[in-house]
Image (cartoon, rainbow, N blue to C red; front, side, top):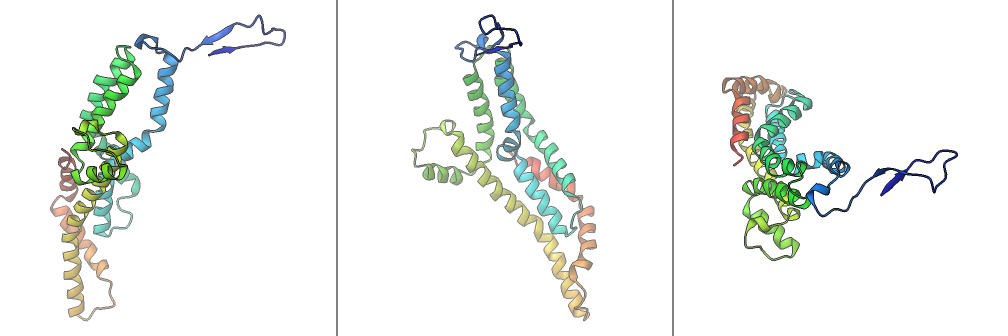
Length: 237
C-alpha cells in the first residue's frame, strides 16, 4: 500500500510514494512499526472489555459494592473510590500474569524474534491459565455443552470464546457468595436493633438509622477494610 502526495502542478506519473507499508510478511523481521502501532491501538481500544472480562476486577468491585451496601452508608465511600481501589487491587493481583505476558509474548514480538500469531497465542495461553485456575469446572462444562463441541483432552485446548464466559460466570458466583457472608454480621445487628426498638415501643423510628453507627463501629474494630482486601487477594489462586 503506497500513499502519494500530489501538488497542484504535479502529475500522477511523476508522483512518488512517500510511505510504503508492507502489511503482508512471513518473517518476524518484516513486521513494520506501523503494524505494531495498529495492534497496540487495537488492544488499547479493547482494554476496558479486557479489564472487566479477563481479570479479577469483576469480583473485586462486586464485593466492595456489597460491603458498602451491607453497612448502609449510601454513597460512602463514593463510586470513584471503590473503582480506584478495585483497579489497583486488580493491578496487584494481575502483576504476575502481566509480567509473564510481557516477558514471553510482548518483548519477543517487539524484538522481532517471534511472529504476530505466535505472540498472540502465547499471551492468550497465559491469561487463559489464570482464568481457568479461577473458574469452576461445572461452568466450563456448561459452556462446552452450549457450544455443541467436544470436550478437549486438556483445558489448554479450550478456545477463549468458551473460557471467558465461563470465567465471568464463576466470578459472579464467587462474588455473590462472598457478599452473602459479608451481609451476615450486619443483618444480625439490624435484627438486634429492630427487636430492641420494638420492645421499647419505638416502632416509628427506622432501625437502619440506629444500626448504622453500630455497623461502622463493628467494621472499624475488626479492621474490616483490611480483612476484605486480604480475603479478595487471597481468594485468587
